Length: 429
Ligand SMILES: Cc1ncc(COP(=O)(O)O)c(C=O)c1O
Image 1: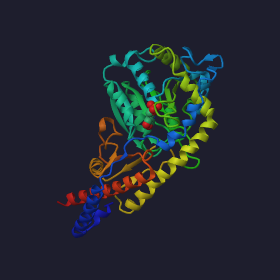
Image 2: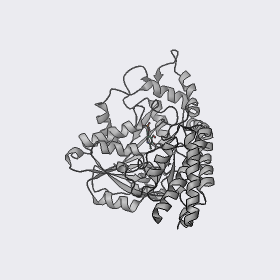
Image 3: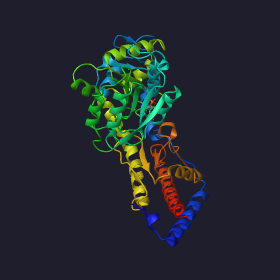
Image 4: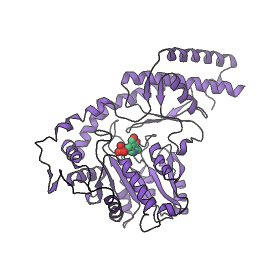
């Protein structure tokens, strides 16, 4: 279907271009400096967790049941922190290790373990020639950076509205023993906002990998980050595994409080089958004596349990929802009837994924930058930064104030229209 610019006569298109160039000049003159690049909570959101800082003082009893918070011990984290982490993911606390403040760091350590020491008695990946990870794309750029940093081949897999294309995933995982992992963000995926359907989760659980050292890296980063109504629900992948009977050593699941309390100053955790956890614990025990328990104690005192987390996340939702509503409103008003773009309408998470015309994304991001708005680099959500059609842009609306976000979106809309009009013109040359 031709878009509005493609349908115009030559004269109409020239007039539209002149008008858009003028709008761009006016915006350039404002010398804006706005940032929609990364999915960070706004200062209003991080302020919600400041009361946590008053909960651990010199008067606080530094015990957690029989555990000492003020000394070595508890390599898997404080019992109360493990219970909270387990409740949030619906798993057994015995299979949870709460370590460090970054889930990405835990994912890195798990890849490192596969690469250097090997998984389930297999040769380390570094001695198995070219090994591969599947990367549903668009996806989270930092996942892809982890595997790329080891020289592991990142293989893109198409994302659909209910999760990755499972026909492609099954064929590659079950047919190729060099495929050792897949990166997944199963709820409110970064950047599409997609939550995997029950069928997709069950298909993951039913995989029969060609490689015994294949693992699903199930990064449930946005498990509790709903901002619209009831939000989406995600089938627990360990329940899906159990439905099929028997224990399968297939999934490493990760989460953290990065966007619940303070990014990089929270608690992060991993859960897996008992056998996989035993192996990961051996690897982790060479890395540290025990984790940051003072921070864990503060988190448990503040958040308490899953109900406490839900209450706290409602406060985040009140801050975040108007920003996502503004994205919807501005994009719809500016682009809705032009046929040049589509975008996602998530109920949770941190991103809107935007699709412009073929060959437009890099040009839109560059033009927005020229007009004072920094966006995530075009192509970033793809392995090696290679978006095959150069259409995808990740919009991260949480950090700017509502006023700044409105201005940034006005610039973005003009940039999209101008690039679409220039492309229509170039196609006629
Ligand atoms: C999907 C996903 N996983 C992990 C992270 C980082 O989490 P952490 O700060 O716990 O390393 C992010 C941050 O944006 C993310 O989007």
